Length: 506
Image 1 (cartoon, rainbow, N blue to C red):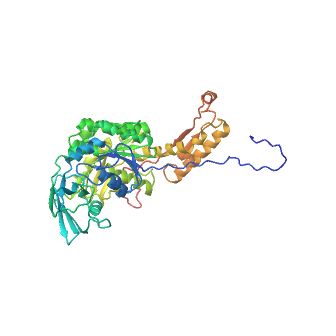
Image 2 (cartoon, rainbow, N blue to C red):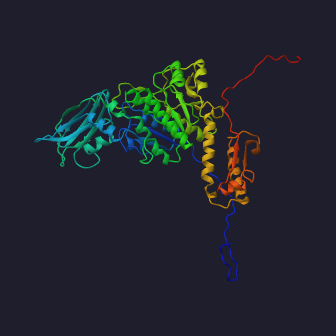
Image 3 (cartoon, one colour):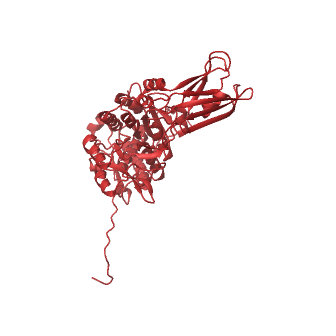
């Protein structure tokens, strides 16, 4: 003992001999990389709900899918997530040049009273109409296409009904600001803002390097290396860049390969990939097999795109098709919370989806499913459902998503829960303590239904003894613990064998 006993008496000491429980890590934290209306660029920002996203990154914008993906994630049961805005100031400044604006003249004297700038980007023209009401009151009407916003009983004085503050807080179409240091009364009238024809391309001008980012600068995918709790990775605006002409098909492949490489390097997350837009089943098969020949147990692909409501200001259609990755990440999170990471995230209804661009048949899925394309299908009376749960791996051992993600969960939990072992004396006592703690954790995993076996002995084993820790290993400062688990596999094909039965016949 370290204490010296020099004075007679009774000594009470605390001795650490108890078990150190291993706590399971989280399994449902998504990371999104894409183009946003505003906000910090390059570095991951943690968000817990949709309101936080709109406060930090703005709302829905034409030609970009990030906001739709994050909304679909939260709508389908997602919780915590990280968002990385790519494109940075270059995309923002290019878009800013295209944002339509108008100067609103002062009611008296020369010069302007207000400046009006379109919020978001649209190919439709926006107008601001200012009407004087009484001596010092105003009403403001903002129009874009079929959308109209009206704000009444506004004044220039500070307070809850201040004209500029009220419009900026409530309008989805414009921002107002005073042109000078003094607040001058605006002249009544209608002031048009020209359409931003090049806004879509400006927002999507992002190259593969900006998605890949830099580890040292904590940008792009590189910035996610410093975030330990991410388990899912989505980049829906890769497809927006392709549609805008900023990326060709090789560029799309380069970004998706970078996503896969990141997940394989980290070893604790899975990339959710989107297919190319507007493909039929044969084209999806050709793209998967010949063009995007990915082979990774850390990636999954979903097809086709999904139809959702289109709340983008100034949109000409009430619905649109978006990449499915954000909705899928939400379903993974929902399935984890309701059943556990061992449950395959399939046969689940996709919330917020109105329809699909193609209703796949069983025969079409029969050729897509074996190559790792997880199909999204419409079932009469059962809605739009995820009908696949495979990785993009050619290794049968890692065919199913739930197996890959279960191993991620077990590995990460054991890694985090056994940090106390480092620099401990590498002896028999330590071996027994490590085995006890790991076995206790795996027993809870087995009791939760994640491992196959009628008893713990059938479901897992933990080996840490002199056989796998000989003196040569100990001299290298190594402690080797061998763990084996028997994961449950999904019942992907349910087969009932039915035959005629004649009572009494032999």
